[in-house]
Length: 166
Length: 128
Image (cartoon, rainbow over the protein chains, first blue to last red):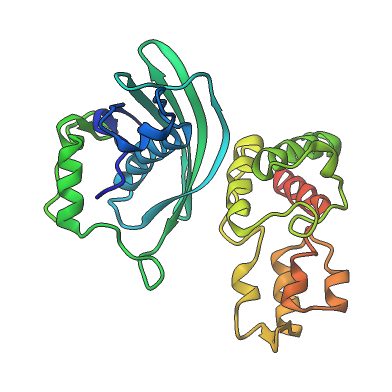
């Protein structure tokens, strides 16, 4: 079972910004105890959704050459809890990308209400002994297809992203 | 060219954001690792914030010389040797390494870099 906290990308501009959605559902067993009778999406998992949106944005811009790992969460603030039936929209923006790491800012919204925001700092790790790849290349492509990155993705010049053969 | 106090205030703000410490903790003599609890990932975060705050470019290893501290050429039995001290001095002219020289164990380096060293580093970059 995979740990996915975003369902689909709606916008994706290489190395710049992306918008992804996560539909909160009562089918997620995790919510049944959080809390009994009043299911609320934990904001720790909203942070995970923010990190997946921004992390994939960064990773794609470096052609998935290094493993992009969430290293620090700064200034995270949440205004209310999302509930089953809500669609959380993550708006990620890259602030800076360097070979060793990247800094991003992500906002989450439900409808037109601001739900939360955080600054996320990623470390870029060279694959090697202690840094296993989470997905084989074909598996990675399958999940990127599920999220429609290459249907909506654009490069910095506005041209459609080309889905790589992996 | 901003004054030393202006530089100190901006460096303090960057450290408060990156390390989650209180403003009162960030005194000039506070050590980055010993007193403020900075880890290696924090140094990268600090580099990002300083670059943004001052409009300067900081190259890898300029602020925290991990490559010297982990090199067999510069470290003997856990202590930085003469060649290593020379390399550190050349790499970090902004830092006061006198205390470190008296006990140059690699473990001890953590207690060397102070907030004042960072302020001097930024001032040097801005003047260049």
